[in-house]
Image (tube, rainbow, N blue to C red; front, side):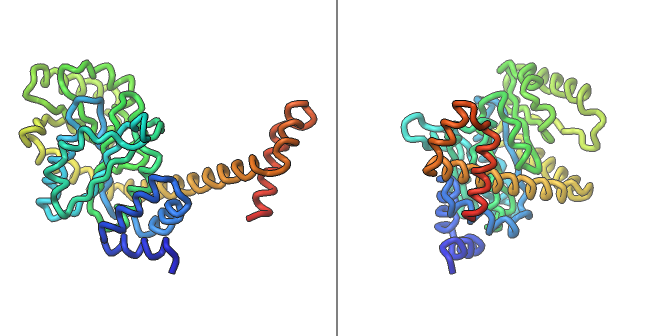
Length: 317
């Protein structure tokens, strides 16, 4: 049995040490991590993947904590992936706001991992897809992904999440920001958090007006809910909306279509990995300087060199 097979078996048996080790392999972008994701992918596809996105300061971490505890009270096992900005010194995740999740993290039925963006744009870490696959294969019923909260680059979460919760807050000037970021198109549920602050009703009306203009043709019209996550007010309504959206996806056939899209994504990742490996091999090839000189002097074009690189890689494989 290979190291990958052995670890995959431990993950299937819900061993926390195996899960943590597998996530480390994936986040370090090791070949073992890639092999592990490919091994686990056929075992995944059952968890409800929920994206929590929105601008910094709206209370995403606090809301994630409340949602995790509420889902746990229903007997679910919960995985949390909190995508953080990278430290400019270590490259690791900056964990300052993870303290807001301490209540849920202390629960044995909750597994939380911070992932560093490492410069990757789109609100997620490059490792997020593999991490979701691992937690899904490990039997977690729901996987919550909290995006980095960097503003207009948050739309990548829609490629992974079945249900995306867009969190807004009054008084942050986000009414126009929502339009700029394309947030309307990715949200299935909108939450106005800190609803005890002045301007909450105005924010609800603004979101409803924009949704009515842009999404009135959809079968699922996103609910707009008010919460005060710090006091655990409104959490139950968000949970009910998530359950309703999951039922809608399954009844409409979109759940299966999302799984098909994820299959396309993992094929694309494999092709991209292969191409990157081919390029790395080419740069260490004895002919690299000659190819470089040929293109520089115009004797050959870059496309011909690329074709030769691919042929050599195929022959090597």
